Length: 537
Figure (tube, rainbow, N blue to C red):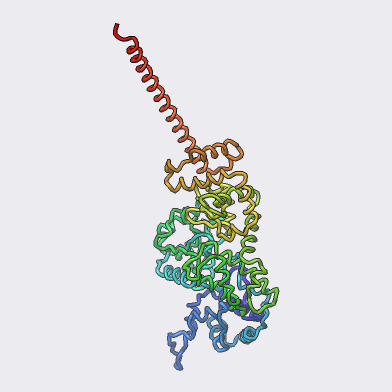
C-alpha cells in the first residue's frame, strides 16, 4: 500500500469503478505483483498435490483490479484467497455484496468516479501502453542485480504513468525514491537496502551535484548486487547526465500511436460503465491532426488529451449521462479550452519571473511572413546557446515551469511549444505574437537567423548582411532591446557586425588601392601627353 492510501473497504464500492478501486487497495496492501498473485491461485488435486497451474492467469486478475471486467462470485473467492483473506473471514460476504452492487449499479456516474486523472500521472489502470510496459519488464528481468534500466522520452510522453501504473503493479518488493531532502543520501541508503527493485522517478526535480554523480555511476554500470534500479528520467535531464538515449538498457518512449490513443480515450470510461459515444475518439484525433494509422503522436498530444478528457468527464457527471458524448466535449471547451487552461495555469505558476515568459515563448514561434509562413508556426529553440540554460538561471527555471505545465515540451536538444493547438488557442500568446510582429520584427528575424547559423555550423555565409544587418544593428542600438537578446543571438549580431566591418574595411582598402592605381595611371598619361605635345626639340 502506498503511503497515505486508505485501507480497502468493500462497503465503499458502490459501482464497478468503486469495486475495482477497493480491490486495487487490497492488492496494494499485499505488495505483490499480479504474477505473484496468480501463483497463489494454483489448484490442488484431490490428494492435496499442487498442479502447478494457476486457476486464474495474472492478466485476468489484473483486469479485475483495473476494472476492465467484473469477476464471477466464484472467481472473486479465488482472488480474495490470493489477496490473503482467510476462508472464514467475514469480510468475504461484504466483498460479495460489493460485487453485486457493482453489477447492478445505476447508470449515473458518481462524482467520486475519476476514470481520467487530468494533468496528474495515471496511478492505476493504465491503458494503451501494453507494448512499452512489456518491453520495460523484459529488460528489467534481463538486468542483473545492481543494474539499471532507464525509461526516458521527451516531456509529456507519459514516463511516470508508464512506470507507476504499468510496470510497478507487475513487480514485487519495490522501494521508491521520491521528493524530499538529501536525495543522494536517501538513494545511497536505498541501494543498500533489501528491496529487489528501486524506482527513481521524476529525477529532473531532484537533481543536485551529489545526486548527479551517483546517477552517473549507476548509468556507467552501477554497483554489483543490490536492487535493480528503474530510473525514470526526462530526455533532456538524461542528456545533461551525459547519457545516450540509444544506449543499451534505455527504453525511449514516444507518443502513443493513434490506436493506443484511441484506447486511452475510450477504455477508462467504458471500464467504469460509461462508454464514450462513437465518433468522440475520431474527432479528437482529427483535431490533434493525428492520422488513424499513425505509429506515434507528438509529445504534447497526450497531456492535452488528458486535460480535455477530464473536463469532458466532469461535464458528463454534471449531466448525469450514461455516455460520454461529443456534446460534453464541446461544452467543456474541447482541446482548445484545455490548452488555454493549461497555459494560464503554467503562466500563473511562474511567479516573480513572469516577465521572462513573453520573450522566451516568442522565440518558439515563427512569425507570419517569415520563411513563407502565412500564420504563426512552432519553431524549435535550442535549450543551450539561445538561453544560458545553467542550473539556477532564472530563464532555465521559467522554462522548467512551462515544461512542467505542458506549454512547452523538451527533448535532448530543444524546447518547443507543446502542440499547434496551444499556439492556436492561447489568447495571451496570440496577443504577444501580434504585438511583437508590429513593434519588433527585427527580433524574430534575429532569432530565425540564429537558428540557421547554428545548424550550418556557424557558417560565415549565414551571418547577417545588407538590410538585415542594418535592422539588427538598429535593434541593438536601443539598450533595452539589446538586453532582450539571448547569448547566441548576441553572438550572431556581433559576428555579423564584425564581418560587415571587415568587409567595409576591405572595400575601403580596395578603393584606396584603386584610386592610387588610377592616380598613377593618370600621372603616366599626363607625362606621355606632355611629351607628345612638346615633341622633339
